[in-house]
Length: 63
Image (cartoon, rainbow, N blue to C red; front, side, top):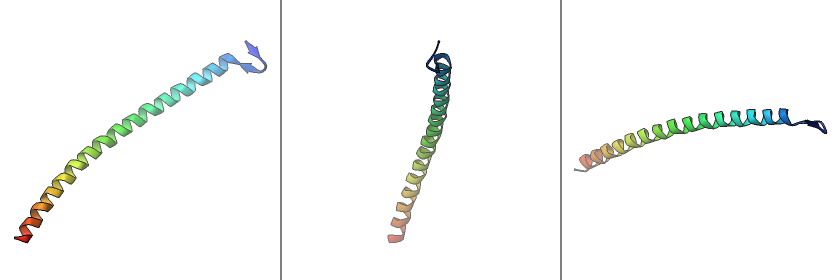
């Protein structure tokens, strides 16, 4: 199996380890993105509420 200094078994093991590492990294990033998306949605709801209250306050001040 060893040819010209390359051990294909070792190479395959290293490649599989790297694939596993990258897969786990991707899963973690997806979880982070999901949390950020949820946070952004909550913040947008809060922003909308504050904007609504601000419009009401502005109308009250004008009258």
